Amino acid sequence: MDTVKVRISEGELQGKKVSSKARGVFYSFQGIPYAKPPVGPLRFKPPEPPEPWTGVRDARKEGANSPQLNMVYKTYSGDENCLFLNVYTPQWPVSRLKPVLVWIHGGGFEMGSGDSSLYGPDYFLAQDVVFVTINYRLGALVRGGTQQTLGQSHVHELLKIFNLFKKRFLNLDGSDVSSNNALRDQVMALTWVNKNISKFGGDPDNVTLFGESFLNLDGSDVSSNNGLRDQVMALTWVNKNISKFGGDPDNVTIFGESAGGACVHYLLLAPSAKGLFHKAIAQSGSALLPICHLSSSVSTQRAFRLGQALGCETKDPQHLADFLRTVPAEKIVLSHGSAQSDEVLELKEAVAEKQRVLTITFTPTEDSGADAFIPGDPVKLLQEGKFHKVPFITGVTSAEGKLALSGMFNSCDVVEIEKDFQRIVPWNLSLELGTQTCKDIADKLRKFYFGNKPVNEETLQNYVDVRS
Image (cartoon, rainbow, N blue to C red; front, side):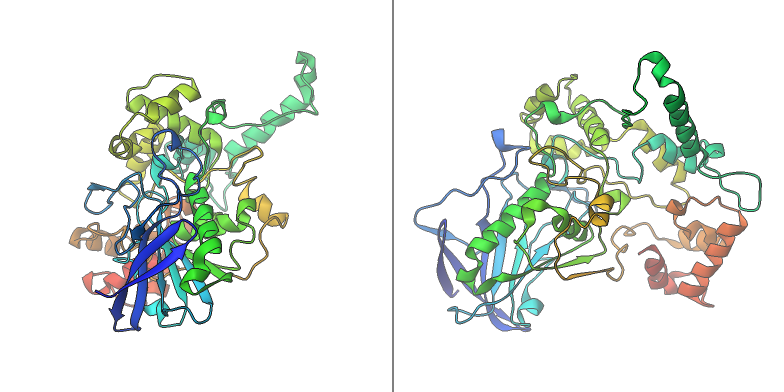
């Protein structure tokens, strides 16, 4: 094996020369630490710059992935010492600087990595660029808090959508039934407060509306959004070192898919990422998606549920943080589901026969304070122009939902869907099955995706396209 060496700011690396059908040859440097291992007292903390090393560090194999549970095989893998990146360059020695592509993997914020087994560099390097992939913290190890990401901060309201309490959100066009009555109730309550609260000593001009919980981890040393902070640290490393690999630090494009696409969008909103990239591409992901963003109050609730599941009964956020730092990473990963509320589990059961509902327990959350990573609601930040003004491409990938459908499609499903195509109407449209509106949408979906073809195993790809 041919080896190559390069000296970066932290020390010397030894990489390797690789043969490729797409490129011919390229040069690989893998498992490069871009931050200190986030272990022990650094668990739940923002990333810190890596320590320098003496001698030559072997960079011929990839570093560990973030601890995670494989969605398909239900196996645990990974290590908390996971903050590594990989650099692939088409030239050696360096002759001129080339554009840099930094890939942010997807996986629902709970699984995935930058490994070449999934995201190899061959075809990118054929375009004469330097290619970088990164690992970042996932799941509960991102923060001592979690999120329920089904679209609203009040799970009870979601349950009403699915006929558990249907009268409040039922929408029947052409009838005398009004829609969104639960929200109208809240407006009526606020109207009462505005009119009467002064009689109770309250100031009607100083009313704060807040969510489900008073609890927050602001009383602890736990920081939020550390997975996103890891990405900024990785981009800082790229800015500092990529020229040694032939990459142009002034021509960096970040791109990602699914959760990685949402991360790209968040980085566009993050003040701390300013100047670290110059173009951005979000594929099948956005910070505006309900499953990618929720309030910190729900995040905090999930943190305490996780603690309870692991044996810590406390209302003290610092006590909870200290306890979680003593729990092995594997136990935390395997306890993710325990952080979801009974209402979320009831929701999943209520719609199980109609739709496959994706629930992600741990995602980014809006934070506050001088060190806030996401300093406000993403919609408002965009409306106010508080984002990095760089060229931006967004769209969707083909067959995005194929992995989620693995093992879920069989002959029984085919028969049921062929008999009643309304089963395919997305649940988050909040449509009552059997209504004319739902039937009309089902007919349009069927015509668009299937034409005159039946739903069967021969048209499986059409079905995947619908669900993607």
